Amino acid sequence: MGKNILIVDDEQTICINLSKFLSKIGYNVSIASNVKDAKKILDKYNINTIVSDIVMPESDGIELLNYTKKKYPNIKVMLITGFITIELTLKAIKGKVDAFLEKPISFNELETELKRLESYDNLILNQNDNKPIVNNKVKYIKKAEMVMSKKSPIIEIIKFIELIANKKVSVFIYGESGTGKELVAKAIHRLSKRKEAPFVPINCGAIPRELIESELFGHAKGSFTGAISDKIGRIEMSHKGVLFLDEIGELSLDMQVKFLRVLQEKNITPVGGKYSKNIDFRLVSATNINIEEAIKDKKFREDLFYRINVIPINLPPLRERKIDIPALVSFFIEENNKEYETNIQGITHEALDYFINYSWPGNVRELQNMIERISVIKDEGYVEVKDLPKKIVQDINKSSENNYNSLFYTNSNEQFDFKKMMESYQKEIILYSLKKFNWNKKKASEFLKLKRTTFVEMVKRLDIDNDKLK
Image (tube, rainbow, N blue to C red; front, side):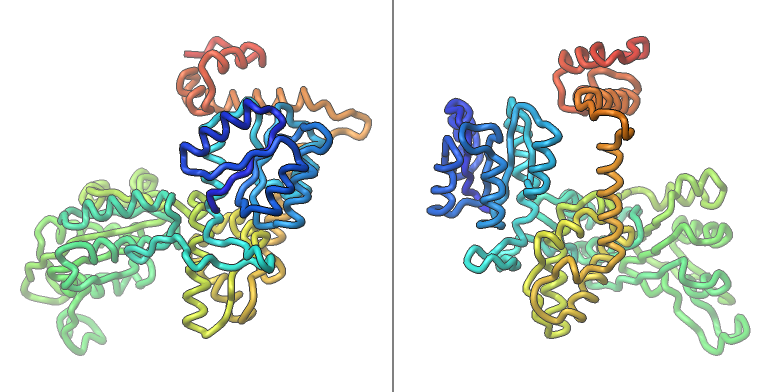
């Protein structure tokens, strides 16, 4: 998202204060006191974002929203108001508003919302023909084989990987299937002094239990039926390098005992072999199961866990790092264009919205496969909602419908009481925050970004039980 912002408000003080703040954090600011002047500025200058009041003399912010989205669909519109009604909300949603802020405006909230909108800066609209294109200067980071936004939580993980890459200690990677655990393991290897030695991966869950010992330790000729020659195991292959044990939680208890002995003694004996071999390897292991629960259930040895869990790394699922989705989509489109000689030029904002709101149970791998399938079938043009798998569209539409129904449901003979509904939701939110922090007022108010005095007043007004409060 660009840095040119138009502020529209009939209150001069608000315009001045917002202008000073936005200019201070790097934005180029234009000001209009009414919708008529705002339209003139839009027609004359290259505006990227509008921050507009809703209630103004003559024409209101909803009219400006509709005008902007029809004539300049690439411009983001943030509406501000002192009182959000159901009617205004529905009109704004219908007009495809990008963000809402309540008065009095918090500068921190304003900056946060602007940063959220910037997650779209990888996919912009061409102002000349109103067609969505992928920005040629896509701001993703391709480092250690991972793609992300500038503000991604993965950035901190990358920094941490660089910090521990040259340490010999064992690393344990937690993450759901498809989050990139092997990519992290490869990054550790590539950034370490062992990068010239082998990186040896093995998926412990993909090998039959009766074969895993031979696969890890190797075997001597004649040690069992079918052992027609000596075989080097994965552990020996990783000498001087990195051994990556994916899904280590799938190892049987007897194999866990044998592998623990290898970690302690730094040597191995092949199946049926007479002599042990000293091996120097660095262990990186990973799992998508709750290993601590497995320990409680006696399915994983606690002593082995302490050996492998020296440096833990937690990879968040894609649904918790949605800021990365635009960058990932752009990257995978480019990669598929090269691989399959296709000409996919980008993705519409409407289709991207579905991607961002989808839960991605298969994480990055699922997203990659989906973009690949769409690219090959479509071959050229822009990815649109009609190109998406029906499952995604149906899931998102159903979720939206359920949220809408739960929010606006009333009995047929009842009138909709906006004030009571808002108080009910406020009470639920306050109770949730108090329970989350064991009824600690200070922590709960900080969690909701409320002043403590405001929080306490709300507790009293909403008649929340004071006895448990700390």
